[in-house]
Image (cartoon, rainbow, N blue to C red; front, side):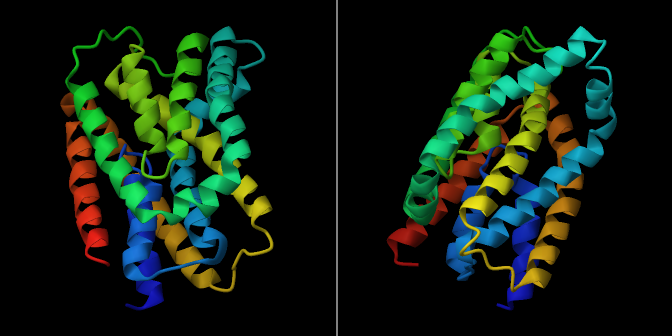
Length: 266
């Protein structure tokens, strides 16, 4: 298959899966494996994630800017900003310590990714069926203790195939956050996390990064941005009324197919 077409398809896949709890990284790595697509230092996979994150910035710009602009005078705005910072810290610290292991071992183990897709799907189904008490419905007014708990859950996403949004959403649900607010807080948290991952990854891999295929990277980034714009609103409306079971089954089916294909030598 032409590399340009693959780049667009992977961009669409990134935009489709970045903000739902199915592991966009796991999907990209598995798709790249089966399609024979490879980029030095995972340049392509890293850069196109920014397209999806920029879609969030556009969609939530007024709310985010409102919090930043009033942080000096509004305690609620300051608490929201601190909640994002506190939630980000655990995964940032662990990610820096484990960066080489994650990129050179875990990212290169397709079977691990497939297994984590299935395991994460089972956990998501179980949590979605629990009768949990919802005590927090505003993602911008979570207690700092709750934000820290969500941040600790986010550390699980360092294992490819687990899903950053999946781990934070499951953590939020277990800590009493409503289904819609859990998704939105996960969205907000992804902005500094993904920009941080992007910057740190580029720094660590600057000697092996391959920007020779800039046209493919640009196409993938644009495809991810447009797809994410369409997906985010749908996800919020869907989980508010139907929960997360669909995404649990999605993970299980994709993971089992990947396990079968890998076992057959593909």
